[in-house]
Structures are given as structure tokens and as C-alpha cells.
Length: 388
Image (cartoon, rainbow, N blue to C red; front, side):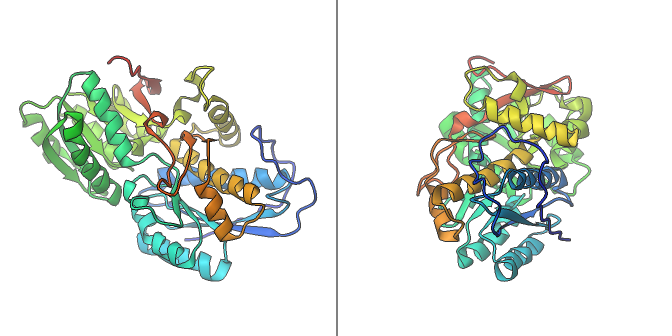
């Protein structure tokens, strides 16, 4: 399923972040493509990405456009299907002649699209989490979310603070779940963590009793880490509590949405996860460099949609603004110039962190960009990283 959105109306709402647009009337359209999973198993990731891109492109156009041109957002829904994503990517290149593309809700859809954009030499800013998207570095590929390796490292640091060193990993068999499992297993020895048990579940599984029974029966475990996104982690969390497992439970940044809390229900109480500062915009200290950006995004999002923010909408916002700022610095939307300026990004404050790209780093975030959160009474609480 696909849809094209062209926004040319004015007077929609005023952005409080700087756009630095030219006041003269727009002369033409600059085509920016997007492919997200607004439906399907990854809907709760892709739907806020889609709506974010629509809202902020509309706002940019209302404020005068990008370098004096209106943005023509050519937005497609891949339904979470990698082959569909690849076909839509080819369409954006061959038919639409886009200057850049934002999207790839999941690791699988992103990996399916990468060869298309690399061959066409069109800059692509992914919204998916796996480190393999940007390692090894691909010339035309960037991404906004923190990597799965970073998530593992953040979780392991908290485990060490709590003196918990023997864990089980329960991972999804989707591309992100497999990648995060691999990264956690690799990172564990250096962090002083022992992975004593591994279990897996499928993206469409509705019963994980057997896997979690094995976890319950395994002696010596001190905590459990779940690597996955979509509905699977919520099903794992509910079953975990139903089986009476009391070990500390960690999820990945792949569940950084209030929809996860709604799906998991009371079972989510006490779950910890690494996530973007956006989820706790109202809890950041006055000196936090991200505070103004995340509060502005959260305020606008809630006013326009009536929904709580998710980190996934924030990823799309960051991707769009990285492209916009690169185009302003370049004074052009020619793909090669956009690519070069994306790679030159320095100190860009987004919802995911302060981004500094380089030829060897196409994510531009360090571990400090992830905040450690705990779910309490249906809300996110910042966990002190000085203690347990």
C-alpha cells in the first residue's frame, strides 16, 4: 500500500525550533522520499514515523519551505514487508527522482532498500536500530536511532551496577532481534556478563510459555534481557509475570513507546530499558542540552495528535531535520551535496541525542545519548546511573 502527500498550505503551526528558511515565495518542489511500516507487525513503530513526517513537512512548508522550495514528501507504506520496501525504494529512485530518503522502520526493510539507494547514489537516513545498517560504513547510508550494540552496553552497565552478572537472552527471530542478540553476546564478556541461557520467539508468536518455562527452570540466572520490537516483547513480558518469574527484566529501545506499556499492561511494572530522552522530556534537568528540542517536539506532537510521544516518531523527526539542515548548509538539494553535508553534521541536537557524524560514523551518537528508564505505574521514570 502506498500514499503520496503533498503539503502546500500555510498557517498550520509555528515551529519553535529554527528552520532558517528563505522568506521569498517557494519556486519549485524538492522531492524527499519516505518508506515506513505504517501498517503490519511494525505498525506501532511506523505509524508515528509517518505522522511525524507529515506534520513537520507541513510545518516547514508553511514557514516558507526549504531553501525557498516547498518539500514534496513522497511517502509510502511498506506494511513491514522487505520485498515491498525494496520495490518502493526503486520507485522513489526511478520514477520520483527524490533527493533523499528517510525511512526503513525495521532492520529488515532497511537492509532490503540499502542496495537500491547505494546503487542510485541517493542519501538514505534509516530509522532502524541494528548496527549492521551502518557497520561497515556505507557511503550513502545514515541512521538516527541508537544501535543495538549501544542498547546492550547500556543494559550491561546497569546490570553491573546492580551486581547482576548471569543472564538469559530472549530474542526475536526478526532481523533486529537476531542482530541485537548477536551484539549482546559479543559485548557480554568485556562487560563481565555471562549469557547462561538463550531462547528465541517468532515475530508472530502468541505463546512463549515453553521458552519462559526454560528460563524459570534455569538455575543461577540473575536477570533476563529481551531483544525485539513490535508485539513480541509485550507477549514475553505478560507471560513472564504469569509464570511468576521475579528476576529483573530488561527490554531494548525497540519497545520505546507507550503502546508497549498498554500491550504489556501491569506486567510492564519494573521493566527497565535504554531509550531516547524524548520519552522523559518533562523530567530532564534544566542543563540538559536536549531539553528544548524534545520538549518542543513532545508539545507539538501531543497538541496535534492527542497521543503520547514515542521514540520512533522522534527518529523520523531527527531524520527529516538532519536532511533539512544538510540542505541548508549545502545551499542545495543535489544528492551528492546532501550526502556530504550529512556526513559533516556536527553537534546537531535531536530527540535521540547530540549527533556528530564522520566518514567512519554514520550514526553520530555515543552511549550518553541513551537514557536508562524504568516503567512505573504506566509511565517512564529516569533511573539514576550512579546506583541501582
